[in-house]
Image (cartoon, rainbow, N blue to C red; front, side, top):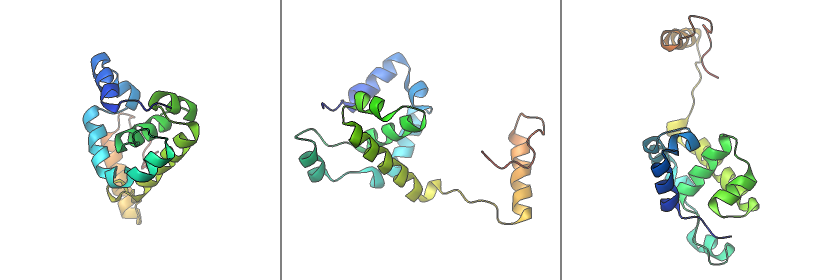
Length: 141
């Protein structure tokens, strides 16, 4: 498999104004998320080169892009085609991404533990929502 060139991939998305559509976030948000997750997305360069028969290592940008696209409904086989790695690697890469998200303290979800906290969150949601009180009490989905 020949790895895709990340910089070229991003340049194509900029040129066609498709980044937001493909990743469901702005390029700025993508790179902000990348910095939060980078240490957990970085692969062992020596091991990656050994396993990939001389291909360049899979960079954190590609791990993040793969995980985000997977969560957006793209299948492992499609990820392999887009980014130039095997389907088996796609599964490992998505798992690496999901583990990184789970370990990231900035992405930790804390649920309300008291009825007062729950009411506060429900009121905040109700104020932000355009559902006209239809989902009062729903904290998130």
